Length: 120
Image 1 (cartoon, helix red, strand yellow):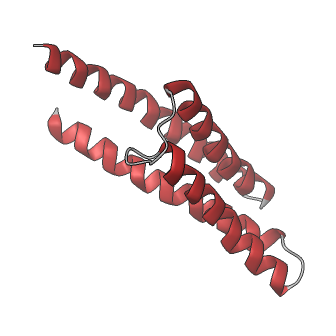
Image 2 (image 1 turned 90 degrees about the vertical axis):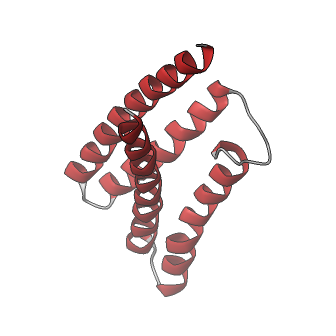
């Protein structure tokens, strides 16, 4: 069970990187002109990573409640899926969202198991 938990945490990190890559891909596709492509392609994932680093990550300097953290996850992952869809990658967008949801459900189950083990 410990291996499953560690694997799911590692996979969650990979999904976070995929979200940043999707936002960057969209930025480079959506921008008109090289300057706007670079600004959107680098700025959008940088803004998402900054928000996540400040408020959502486990080591975030500004701790927020679970509802706000969940909302932040929904916004960032939703934006990544929308970015893929807007870039013409609809099937990839759907796949990304489905995998994120499965990962989140497994995270909740893993956290519940961890909490139960701590009470013993």
